[in-house]
Length: 137
Image (cartoon, rainbow, N blue to C red):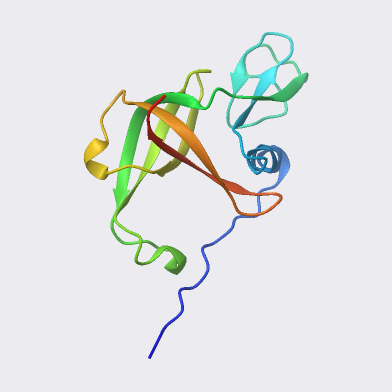
């Protein structure tokens, strides 16, 4: 008897997070930047953490960074991810200075602190995409 894989959970972000994911769904990483002090911000917010300005815009990021940390999942909580493990969730320090969390698109044996990585975007809908990182950049 064949079983069907349940769909992967698709979050429903709101507020400034919705803006981040909507930009990500365009196929490229965009980060919030302060128009007054040029600081890059993540997670998105309503006021700059550096100068307090509310003049914040999303700008295209380089999409490269360095591996800061990771964890490996062997048993997913979401049944939509069953059968895909083990996989790594990584924290990447982007060249813009902020850290992003995403999935790993490389062999687990390649994971190493300070490894240069490049981002990949997997569009799910007009309003949401998943971000992944792989060696390179």
